[in-house]
Image 1: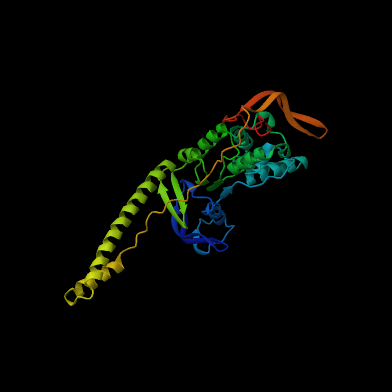
Image 2: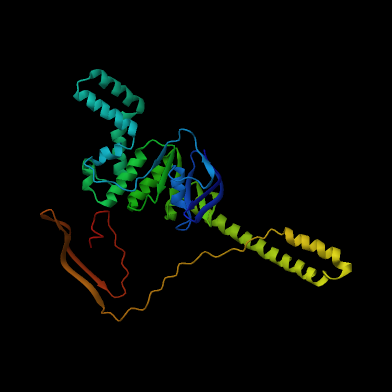
Amino acid sequence: MIAFRNFALRRGERLLLSGMDAALHAGWRIGVVGRNGAGKSSLFAAVMGELEADAGDIDRPARLRIASVAQETPGLPDSALDFVLGGDAEVAAARASEQAAMQAEDWEGVATAHQRLEELGGYDAEARAGRLLHGLGFPSDTHRQAVSAFSGGWRARLNLGRALMQPSDLLLLDEPTNHLDLDAVLWLEQWLLRYEGTLLLISHDREFLDGACTHILHLHEGRAKLYVGNYTSFERQRAEQLRQQQIAHEKEQAERAHLQAFVDRFRAKASKAKQAQSRIKRLEKLAGTEAVRAERALRISFPEPAKLPHSLLRLRHADCGYRGNGGVAKILEAVDFGLESGDRIGLLGRNGAGKSTL
């Protein structure tokens, strides 16, 4: 279990979270939601020990194993398979020891490495890494390619695969679907449903949150509140809470106005002074329930465009690609495509198919 006790967090002068009390139990899959800037990524950094609390603390088990996704991947010569295998550091070390012992013809060292791999379940590690790569959309013939051969989006997938390969009690995923196509998103959702540890997930994909999460942690105006259920359930619960809060506020305001009117009318009257004093005390004890404040709306204005020709763009038998390293990489061939005034077109295709190139 991970427990936040009166936890507070600042970034510079800005208070992100205050008075947070929450217990996250083993096996829960928790979606962390809130407006941009609410403190979601900072909360992750605090859980990993990269940021210190400004007040309160986080209680973690002494030997909690935490896995998270690296933000950058250098252009390594390692194969995609070996890179993902490296997520399980103990297995990777045992495999390296085995290889070194074999090269040195140290048969006792080989036997020791074999025993260690047996203890760790390391003999199926390569198959597990291969399944992760396959699920994340890597064709089998790319598993032995160097990390440096992949584009940024595919390297982001490799980072995700490496984190999933790492044995962990707590898995932190910050927008894991950003570089995934639909098939990979669906695969990841199923993988997370089988994950036995605790999951903390930041995502703006409500369908993914619905499918993957058992709880929602909502960060709002410096406060954190935990809800049972997926994102759709959270929305229903929160809407009802806001409705009840507004009803309570309006009822309190009506009572406050009634009491104040009595006090103003009879305060100076000797025969009513005791009753007026009683109502003053009642006024002081009213809770001060806040009115529901509307979320700041995002306002986007599309100005009227100048008059345009009906046909805006026409490609005829176009080849699209890139020049470099003494050659030409052709991504698309013989493209025939027209864009007419007023069209709204969705561009579909697997990663690497040429959408951004087009």
